[in-house]
Length: 151
Image (cartoon, rainbow, N blue to C red; front, side):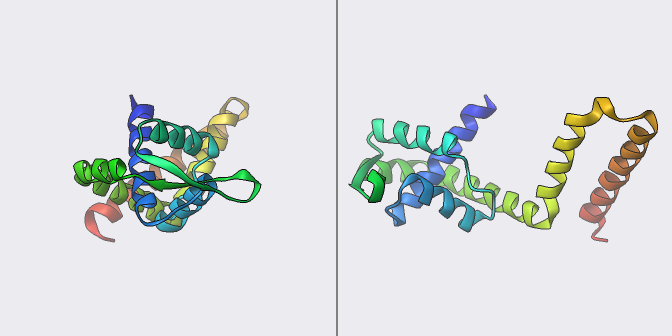
């Protein structure tokens, strides 16, 4: 369910970007990174979505660029689809901007640290686990305090 929602949301973002730009898949990923401050989505996410949008006649290949890269543009059906889903597009854009802000605040380092912790948790000693537990609880407590009380 989450994956389906994520793909639908990213499809809307791609359509919104193509409303103002003719771009190839990599360029779309770069634009997402530029606009929202998040890590560029993988080609494994972008290209299947482009294929799906093309099959649904929401985008089309405008031209082939260097090295036969497909340059995409939105169709009139794609513009209509965006208009019909205007509120959801705005929600998705707002969410991505929040994720970008989180990333800029150090969220990326936090996520990478948690991934590292999960990967290596079996090799940690009990003392190391207790120290990490304390650190995580203190961090969570501090974040909640700042968010709730502004300090």
